Structure formats: structure tokens, C-alpha cells
Image (tube, rainbow, N blue to C red; front, side, top):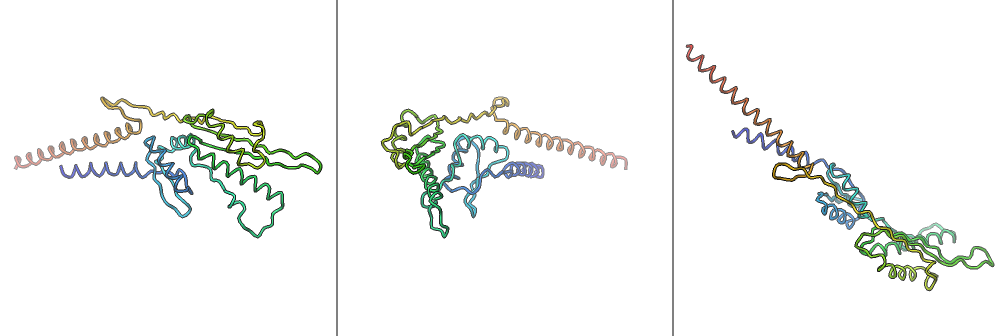
Length: 254
């Protein structure tokens, strides 16, 4: 009996170790904040995620069976967030001499990144993109082309676009040179609702219990192993009983 229990425990332990060890890399090279946000978001949907520190940041892994759901969940949540550069990083000192056109392009890019980074801090904003046009004289004698900007906001349902738009308009207008005091037509703001992830986990009825398909598969596997063990136990008892009868017959024959 003791040997049978040891065998059962060994089989169950091997089964669980196999299920737990089959992980797939989801993201790597993350900042610790992004890795923590990803783990927290997946935990909301009962997905176990493993965060590991590496030389070039952090990585997050999940079980192979959860990879598709994890990708859809993170896409809906806008995670991981887009890496942005700031003015200091774009204009760091280097030995290369840039042309005025290159310097202008770098400045516009850095300015857009700074404004995007600020908008991304608003609760409910999933993705923020800003496109900037600074005042410029196309040719000598021509009028100066006025500043303008377009803002794209993808937001969660907990954000009220009508309530937040005046604040975003004021923030962007005062952040971009030449845009303050201009007509509202020079600053276009577009709000697009983010697609909400619908977690469709089918529930399987197992007698009085309700389990997910993954749990149901695990229960069936365990039941199959226990059934095989029980069958082997019955077969062992039968063979032992048959051997005892043979020994008894031999003794009687003597």
C-alpha cells in the first residue's frame, strides 16, 4: 500500500511540474514599472506571470496555454507602454555637426515625445500621439506658416472625452511654441475608445462543480492516471491471488 501511495504522489508531482514549467516569454527588455504593470494586469484575469530581472531590463513569462489571452489583454490595456525619448536624450552632446534642418526635425520630434509622455499620465489614456507643425517661413517674402498640432487619444471607458478635452487643448496649446491663443481649428484632438477585452472563458459543468476548460483537462488527466493506478492495483491483487492458489495447489499435491 505504501508503494502505491508513493507511486501516486510521484505521478501527480510530475504532472504539476510539467504544467508549471511550460512557460513562454511574453516580453523582454522592459522597465521595472512596465513589468509590474503587466504582471498586475494579467493577475486581474487570473493569469500567473513570472517577472525576471535581466541585464537589459526585465522579462515577463506566462504559461504557454495563456499566451493568446495575455497578448489580447495587454493590447487592450496598451501595455507595455511605448518607450519615449525626452529633449535631453535627443539633444545630447555628440561630435557630429547637424544641419539646421536636422536640428529642427529633432526638436519637433522631441517636443512631440514630451507632450505625448505628459498626456500618457492621464488616467484612462491608453495611447497618446501628437503631431506638431511649428511656425515656418517656406520662402523669403512668403507669410509665416502658423503653428498647428493634431492629437490622437485612445482611451478607456472610465475617461470622459468631453470633460477632459478642454484641459488637453489648454495643455497642448501652451506646450507648443506659436500655438497659444490660436484658433481651435489649428489644434485637432481626436478621441477613439479602446477596444475592451472580453474574457471568454467557457465553464464546464462537472457534477456539482463548475470548472474552466483548462481545469477540466487537468481533472480528466488526473482521473485517467488514478484509473490506471486502480486498474493496476486490481490486476496486481488478481495475480497475487492466482499465485497464492498455485502455491496452495502445489503444497496439496505434495
